[in-house]
Amino acid sequence: MALISILTPYRNAEKYIRETALSILEQTHTDWEWILVKDHSMENELEALADLLQDPRIKLFENSGKGIVDALCTALSGAQGEYVTRMDADDVMPSFKLAKFLQVLENGKDRIVTGKVKYFSEAGSISPGYLAYEKWLNDRVDRADFYAQIYRECSIASGNWMMRKVDLEKCGGFSGLNYPEDYDLLFRWVEAGFSITGLELVTHLWRDHDLRTSKTSEDYQQKAFFSLKVNRFIELDWNPEHQLIVNGTGQKGRLTAKILIGKAVPFVWVSHEPEKFRKGILGHSLVGPNEIPYCNQAQILNTTLLREEVLHQLYQERVIQRCIFIL
Image (tube, rainbow, N blue to C red; front, side):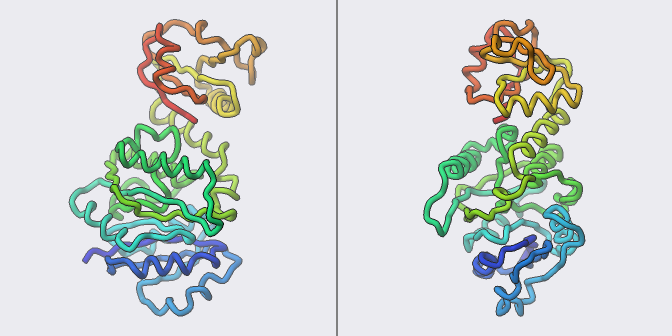
């Protein structure tokens, strides 16, 4: 059987980590190692796992640095498996998860496998925003467009993928990732040319609670996401020979413009109410849709809720090579 390394940094997860552990112990694929990395936790997670730690497949490490990126690097350095997956210390995996993921990966190289997700909460209700994100993630599986939607949001849940360890190391592992690290890792997979296979199964149960890192850390707030996605757009997709258009002047539009200005990337900034901004924003002028200079090819960073077909109608006198959505 193939050994799978499950990487789990943990910090202040005492309340939930036992349920996570039990879901791992119930896996139908039993050849795994669970690498737990303590990331400066102030709680007693190991006490919650005391009767389970005699299982030799559970291995304990201390973070050699600080923060989840360093903890993941520590975990990967201790991993012995041919395959690697990540698991958060407050989530749950269905019993078939490892077996189903492995079945896909054994039939191909340079591949990542994922599946669908489902939020759950002891409180009983999930916020509309998280339910919308759950649906959006699962739509990516149905449509197999993980990379095409990469500038909207992170299109794979952080604890819901598996790949060969050698492939992960080939693209740099977790070393040097920017926060949010799961999103940055997805961009690395794009650069490496890995394909993604999505299973039509719920393979990850995502716990929603008030102390989730994504809710409490600035590393996972809107500013961090925009900084990452705009900078990666500049590195991976920006074509200086094409006109770059930023559509929208709301908070997201201003964050986008600020980053572009800081990088000295030229762009045309479009407002649908340009009369309000005749003095410009951030020292940059704005124009209305009908004032955009004519061009043969353009890229659009859309920071509004306008759909792609609406944008094409709006800019129908221009030839738009590609619409990049940043929402």
